[in-house]
View 1 (cartoon, rainbow, N blue to C red):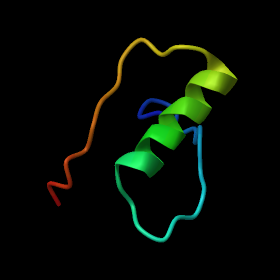
View 2: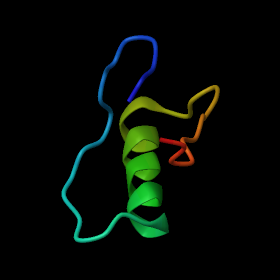
View 3: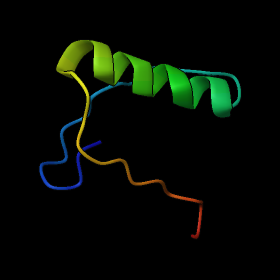
Length: 46
């Protein structure tokens, strides 16, 4: 999700969130929109 516009770039259901599903989301985003300028991660600080 883009922090500035709240646009969602990739969404799908998985049994358990992990590295593979995160990489899938990044790959889908790059395939559709090209390489991004920056990537921020949320380490679950909530």
